[in-house]
Image (tube, rainbow, N blue to C red; front, side, top):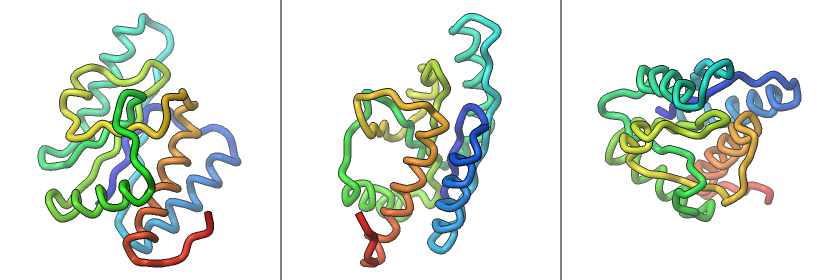
Length: 151
């Protein structure tokens, strides 16, 4: 099973539509769940990260392989990500991807991570990044199954 734990909710219709589309496509290959944690803004950064950490941790299973999305994580090609997902499935069974909020991830979440993944050194809005992650997960399954997928 794949879980995507993310801070914040998607408000824009076009991003909701894209998220729903890729979510539906992925269900052909795997069970998937998206868990939205509350986003905070009315306090200092340290307090915000602590609150978000508590919510994220509640959604990580003891045996989950946690993949955090971090600017300083490892960059992979789509083929390498596909292989990584396949290996995690064989060794763990459940993958939990974690997308932080506006201030990133609490250090404790980074320490809990089994693997830090980066898609770019650039910063993306976390709502948009959810769509990008879903598209790459879908692409990974297409690669694993030797199915064509337009680039």
